[in-house]
Structure formats: C-alpha cells, structure tokens
Length: 208
Image (cartoon, rainbow, N blue to C red; front, side):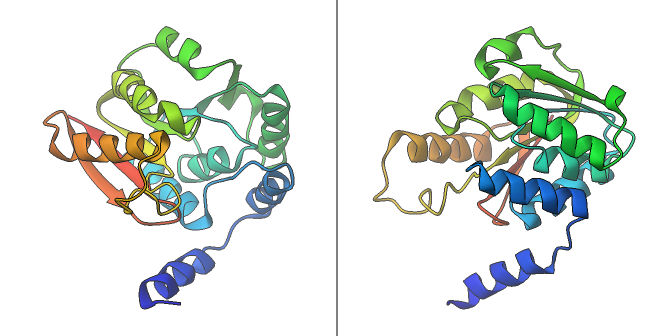
C-alpha cells in the first residue's frame, strides 16, 4: 500500500459514524447500493454545517446514508430527496425516523431525476447533492446549478469514478463524462470549484 493509499485509509477509518448512519450503511451494502464513504459523509456534514444550510436537495436517495450525514451537519434543514426506487426510499425514511429526524423535515420524491429536476424551483437550495446515475452527471450538475441559490453549493459524489478519471487510458462514457465535468468547472467563471480526494472523490462547487 502506497503512502497516499495509507493516508486515505486512515482518513476513512478516523470517522466515527452514528448508529443510524452505520445501520443505513450496512443495509445499503447488503442490497448492493454503494453509499458515500465515511470520509465523504463527514465532509458533507461539515459543508452543511459551515454553510448554515436550511434547504437541501439530493439527487439519489439511496438508503439514506448521505441524507443522514447532511442532516447531521444541518439539523434544522429540510431535505428533499429524489430517487426512482421506492423501496430504497422507504428504507431511507425508516433510517431517518430511527435517527430522530421529524417526518416533516424530509420530502421524498419518487421518480426519474431527469423528469423531476426541471420542475423544481430555481435559486431555492443552499446545497444540491448529486449521487445518482453517473452517466447523467453533467445534466444533473447543470440542473443543480440552476436550483442552487447564489452562493449555494453543488456537491458531486464519485467524482473520481473509482480511480478511472485519473487514468488517461480509460475512455468509457461515464469516465469521460466525469473528466469533462471536472475540466469544465475548473475554468468556469460561474463557479468556484474544489475536488476532494476523500472516498471516491467529492466535487464541490459554489455558485457565483
């Protein structure tokens, strides 16, 4: 294991997850849904806390791991979450209840993100978190930037796509999509961008 890999492993293992998050993670892995890593979750919580987020929307509910981390950082926020899998959302709802999150603070929308996002109000969210169909990541980020308020954040999970983005020999559509996204936002005057290497990569954008 290289020194960099050892540092990544140390950073992941340093995070202590609450029982509800740990349970949601275990359930997610059991059904084959990849949740954000502990280090990425901790970073989501930190960003949510630092921004004083009140309205958060996520594209990709999963089984609730990312939502729980976001609400950990912003306990007074309202979370809107979109996913096409109703069973996954029911599991996420159960996880939120076990964590003591009032039902009124969580709005779950079942549907395809490409169809739901155009109907959401622009400039309305403090944080937009994207962790859904990786083949549509550019489209989701474009919607995210429309939905985020000026000064709001768009956060994108798996931005390094299992290490493939840094490998120039990988040219499949998903890898190329993430690579294009990272290149475009790095020079865009519309955003401030930062790429964290935590977990599988977390792209962080601030809407100017």
